[in-house]
Image (cartoon, rainbow, N blue to C red):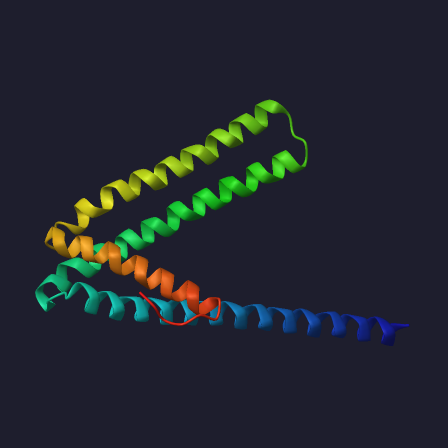
Length: 156
């Protein structure tokens, strides 16, 4: 009896450690993928907007801060969406759904307002022509990666 309990405990511990290691490996893969993607993006954008070393010194810190703010805003939108979806799926009362809908719309509004201020912030480091090139280059980069994910080629 003691032996079977010990065996069960050891099995549970080993499986837990294996699951933890697999999750850790997945997190490492995601972080590596994100770093690789950002490196590709920075190289692509630098060429597309023809950024000088002097411009780069002031621009990239702003760009990195904006990306962090975008990630946070997007996370808030996704979180509010998931909460709203869950409440609707579970048939929550109208007041709770109304409050969650308002939170979702507020998160979207905050995300749009952030985007409205971004060009002005970039304009502190780059001439407006390069800011415009940046927006075009970001869209090209995004479309190229979507095509790659779908098995397509590299077009602009």
